[in-house]
Amino acid sequence: MTNLIVISFKNESQAIDALHKLAELESFGDITVYEKVIVKKDSNGQTSVIQSDSSEGLRTLSGMALGTFIGAFAGPVGLLVGMMTGTLTGAALESDYFDFSDDFESKVMDRLQPGTVAIIAEIYEESPDFVDNAVAPFSATVLRSDVDYVYDEYMDDQIEELDEEIAAERAKIKSAAESEKMKIQKRIDQIKEKRQQRIAELKKQQKSTIAKIKLSMEEEKKSRLQHRIQKHQTKIAALEEKLKHLEHH
Image 1 (cartoon, rainbow, N blue to C red):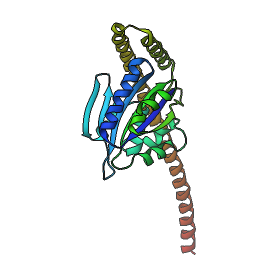
Image 2: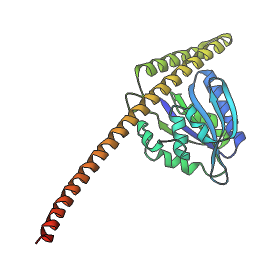
Image 3: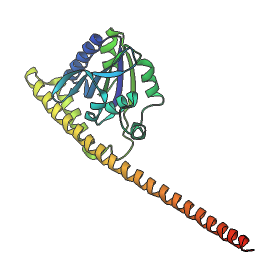
Image 4: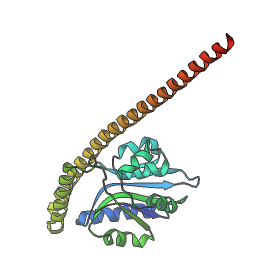
C-alpha cells in the first residue's frame, strides 16, 4: 500500500537520523520511498523546507521559501505541504484529487506545532511496522493516509506498470548479492523518476481540465447575469413607457 506519511520530531537532528533509517529500509527492499521532504515550523508559525529528496539525492534547502519549492513536487507530498502552508495555488480545489482520510490534514496541523520538524513522505510499505519501528527510538509520532488517486487521470496504466516494476526490483534486493544491490537501486531510482514525470504530466493535464471547467463556469455565470440584466432592462423600458404615458395625460 502506498501511504502519505507524516513523521514529526522535536528537533532537526532526529529527523535527519530518521531519514537515514528510511534510506536503510529502502536499501533492504522493505519499503519504497517515492518522495520525501523535511519541513520545520518556526516559533512564528512559519513553515520552511529544510531538505528535499530528488533523483539527484538529498539537497539541503534551509530557509527556502515554500512558494518557490512546491512546484517541484507533483504528487501528494507537495500537495499536503501546500495545503498546510497555503502556498499551493488552487490547493482547496486540487485537494479533491486525493482521498486523504477524514481529518488527516487537521491532525497534521495539530502535530506540527512551532519548533516541530517533520518528514513528509510518499512511501510504499507492505506493513507499517517497518517505518514505525525504525523511528520509534526518536520518540516520533507517525500519521498515515492511504494515497488513493481518485480520478482516472491520476491513476493510469503507466503508473501502475511503473509501480509493478519497482515492486519487482525491490523484491530482488532482498536476495541479491551486495555487488548487485547498487545496480538494482539505480534501476529503481530511474523507474521512480519516470513515475514522477508521469504524475507531473497528469497534473498538467488535470490543471488544463480544471481551467476549462472554470472557464465554462465563468461563461455560464456571465450568461445568467446577462439574462438577468436583459430582464431588468425590459422591465425598466416598460416602466419608462408607463411613465411617459402618465406624463402625457
